[in-house]
Image 1: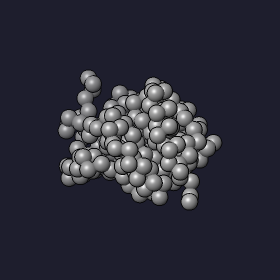
Image 2: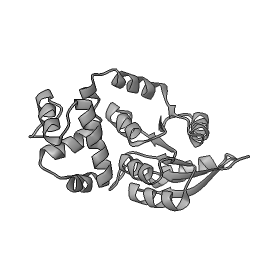
Image 3: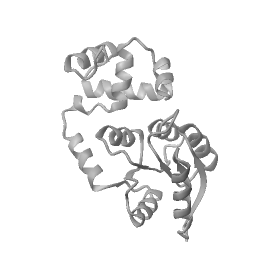
Length: 211
């Protein structure tokens, strides 16, 4: 039997400890680390190299999406399963585009959670039916409507005159990640530079200078 090494990331101690206790009851699971914020999660992931990271989204400092991006940048093969109470379209899209392998809600039955962890360890995508439905609806939308919340954040900061380094600092992401977001933005808006992207986004109401 192969042991699945798990890193738990959640800012609530009761949730972390509760999950650790729950997962300890499975013979093939071993919780190797606990983190209360995104920054610690990134550090522990680099040192522990877990098979699966269970990631909350809303945390102080570096949030779950920022942590996912940082982890995937350092280790593209990382398997990260979001486990959160938030199910808005923006949260789902941000997490999946950041590189999450799966997305579950905290009210998921324990047996489904166990199956999802095992599937995630194999690199399989795990989405609840509601999450999958929302993603499909999003994919069918016009390209400009498919800018992710994080891409909109980046473009909003570009419109305010920020350079890539400043944008990275404000969003807690690397300059390389900012550049990647810009490439995706240009492609989706059908433009070739920052000025054109801002112009098109303003015309379509995607961003606002007063936001």
